[in-house]
Amino acid sequence: MTAPKFFSEENKPINKFRDESNRDLWSIFKVMGEFVDGYDSLLRIGPCISIFGSARLEPGSMYYEMAVEAASAIAENGFGVITGGGPGIMEAGNKGAHLQGGKSVGLGIELPKEQGVNKYVSPEYVINFKYFFVRKVMFVKYAQGFIVFPGGFGTLDELFETLTLIQTEKIDRIPIVLVGKEYWTGLVEWIKDKLVIDGYISETDLDLFYLTDDTNDAVKYVCDFYKNRRLEPNFSY
Image (cartoon, rainbow, N blue to C red; front, side):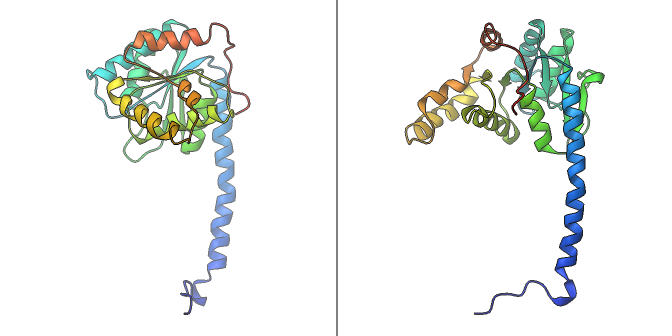
């Protein structure tokens, strides 16, 4: 059986690939630029908590208002608030920090259906990114903790990547709080019943996150974590 011939001589794939490779090499400098801008900006802001959750939740919804409360309390305790700068829970997090007079940081991303940052991000703390992976580094490197509300794929992506980094000791332990037992309990039970029982993770890995329905409890958990720990970025990451 003859293998299919994907390219004819006229297509000259080698030259085409060489051109694309050159463009890829030059894109490295764009990536480096985003890292430099992000490091330089966030390092000067000080201790922050990253707040994640759905971009689709509207003002007045339960989790939106809970995120406003949590962010206000976080700011009242001296932390800045980092979000993705968009609508929904991100807006709620920035709003809570803004209302309390705290540092309200928005790490924006260029998306077809989501442009710009919400009005509660402090103008001096707007940082826009083209590359998701660069933005994700900023969320983790300069956050002293995560408060995670119900959300979609992006929320779960951020949560599990951070848990992986802690589990593999690529970053230092930071507090991770899941807010909303109704939303999270099914996933937590699956983690216990499948990942722990079948040996994919250790039982002690369940201690890497904390589940609550109370925003005051969530903020207390974060603050108590740092009573005897230093507040500093994850310099090794």
